[in-house]
Length: 312
Ligand code: SF4
Ligand code: SF4
Image (cartoon, rainbow, N blue to C red):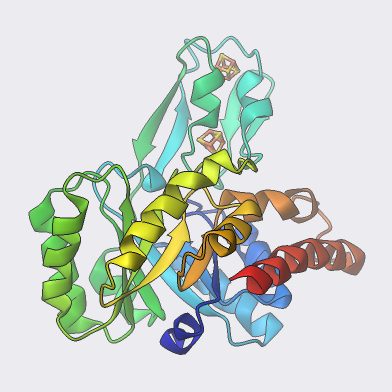
């Protein structure tokens, strides 16, 4: 049960990318990190992705769990890059900047793969303003519940407060698994909104994922992780009826800093940092045929999992 793992205060969640609809990539990420000992996997609200996640967990035969993340209005987790070919001059700077290897040169135009997670690293380097972002359609709550994930997480983005409360109430009344909400230090009136949501769930203990810098492209510096640590500290000191997960801007320095400053959380979610660690292995075309590639990927992943469990 997820709550048993969270109660141990060393839960490790791997975020496959809320907008990542490359189900083959998701399968590889889950296969590697489940073998390495991660506890739960966060996937997009997409039928094929959820099915591949289950397939990967069956292959590994461990007890890792699944979260389905639902991005609401304007949430960048559910946006994907789009290239305007009239503006693009094929300089390829975006290809070099993409942490997901989602862009490639299609000779006459830059093409984008389904594993784009909307991180915007490409648009930051594009001098021609040729990259914009479009919202994707994902499954609705009722359909997701049918897949019986262990946890459902809402990413409010800038959705209106009423919509968030309605969805949260719907989950409270219709979903038996863990309910989770992703919050950011940038959210307006954060603490009073969290209080209101917790009133809806009454005696049920929920999960709060505290994002510092969401989709931070795998920055490995201590600086990139400070915001999530600060927000996690603030929320954990409030002694809310909630499990606190440090996320968004997490990297190998996060568990060490949490430990150093004695900040107690229930776990850490790793996103782009974890994916980047194994990127060169999972991008190999012969990944499923080559056991040595798989083993090298698992070894890399294990190092992160073991270090995290040691410090949490
Ligand atoms: S950085 Fe901009 S101009 Fe250069 S290849 Fe990418 S989209 Fe085109
Ligand atoms: S840099 Fe980020 S937003 Fe751009 S294509 Fe790659 S994953 Fe998508």
